[in-house]
Amino acid sequence: MQQAQFDTREADGDLEAARLADLDSYAILDTSAEACYDAITYLAADYFEAAAAAVCFADKTRVWTKSHYGPTVREIPRENSVFEMVYTANGPVIVQDVRSHPEFQRRKLHVRQLGFGSLAGVPVYSAEGRVLGMLAVFRKDAGFAFTPEQIERLTSMAGMVSTQLELQRLRKSTPWHRPSSAPRAMGTVEGDSWPTGADLREALDQGQLVLHYQPEIDLLTRRIVGVEALIRWQHPERGLLPPANFIPQAEESGAILPIGDWGMAEACRQIQVWNRLDPRNRSLRVFVNLSARQFSREGLAGHVESLLLQTGTSSHQLGLEMTESSLMTNMSAARDVLTDLRALGISLLMDDFGTGYSSLSYLHSFPFDVLKIDRSFIGRMTEGEQPLQIVRTIVELARVLNMSVVAEGIETCEQYRLLRQLGCRYGQGYLFARPMTAEAVTELLQLPGRILPERESPPSLSVMCLA
Image (cartoon, rainbow, N blue to C red; front, side, top):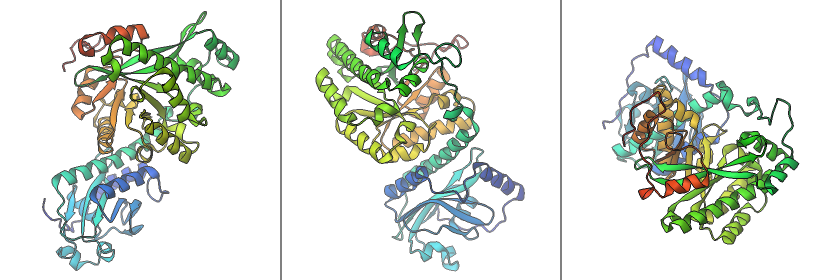
């Protein structure tokens, strides 16, 4: 890759106006520091063993630093800046030796003033493909040879910045990203207080609560590698009720704690049933959802360890799913709890990634080992390049952080094809199997190699999903 040179041509007025309009739509300039962007700069600095790294955005006259690692300048003139080089190149810029680079010798740039010897910068694009800013890394040593693979990795990290921008814009503009606007599920008619805490405890005592399971598969082979446990209420009069009809009330009344204890114990019991059926099922993992109140209970890790010992269940066969919102109450305590759970060998999955508060910072700070892409992104990924890019970047993020990634809500052959193409290894959805009883899952586990047969998309698509 050639050394970068300055281009003094003036930006086209119309293109610059469109770029500035894009920048304004994200409302990112002059905002407070955010952990999600810090996670990216720290990741970049660590990967390149850099003295500094920065995520910057530029308006018409200045370059403003949103996040940085190491020494930096909060705001500098755009003229003669590294951003201007990246913007002009509309791609990666590498300066192997700042001291000998002719353009840096002729201009007193802040890069020299801070004592950096080499640098690499890549564009941060808007969803419309316009350059909003850059991600750059700076090393003290001169003559460092950035490899094409390293620049590709830096570009992927810049894509994470773009995705984070888009996720934040979606949360601001889309109602389903606002918890306060979501209607509360009611038992019968609006305003009905059913079920009460007493109703829920009675259901638990009378054995009316059941677990259904949805298979998780290896997208390359369609082999069942795990299942997600999903609670249902088999009410004698109202029929089979989904969790939305009673879990919010269970949270409010405190009944979620005994219900959650029962759910984990039942999942562990079922694991043992499948293990006895076939010892090869010991590679199977069952994920159980944890509510915010369950997660915040004192001594959670000790309780889970005791349950594993009582049931004789191996920790590697149990996974716990939690949403970002369940971590918000006490971040420090949450980190300690998650660390203790991981020390037991339990898999930790962040559920509904991208729909919460500061998604990326949680992945960087907490010991999650599995990331589940929210179904809303999977459902939109065939609608155009923008939603597809979001999924692509989340998959790349998981790869960079050495995490497994699971796509939920796969319903069509096209989604299936695209996810495999993007390198997403695991998934679940109606295309493969709906949530089902333990008995129905048992039948699937007896298939040769636990491999699901080919399935067609919904009736509107008659083609087979080819592996």
